Image (tube, rainbow, N blue to C red; front, side, top):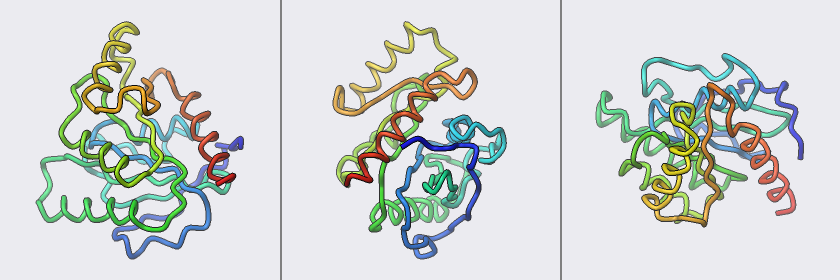
Length: 200
């Protein structure tokens, strides 16, 4: 199904799993480490500059933010791995993310974002393992690809896929909010996932 991204609008923020509304539409979720560029990529997908708030301070997404695009829910999940928050807040974020994924929702696709410039962190590996164990359909978007040459991007994608232990099993593509590299591919993958969810 082709989405009209110009309809993208903010719906609401939810601080706890209990606040999440009952699912009424397929959902596309975005998850990744703090400072991975999640908000910037979502804005690029939406073709909007400031709809998803971009902060210079990592860890500023402290709730699940829902957006509506042509009747489809896009869920912006809290960034994980930011050190400068109290342990109690980290635990709240973990409970919120876990609560979201374990609810009976219409999980059409999760876009797991990982910075292409660095080795996969322990938390990145845990997140990917979590998605596989819970059978959440997902892809990997390797962000900030504009910082590397194309040959280095290919090398890093191969290396990261080995580190994440799913080489060849999951779609993984480099992308950039700066140059829009990979963004059309992301939209196409999202729309294909929605078609599959609909056939369900």
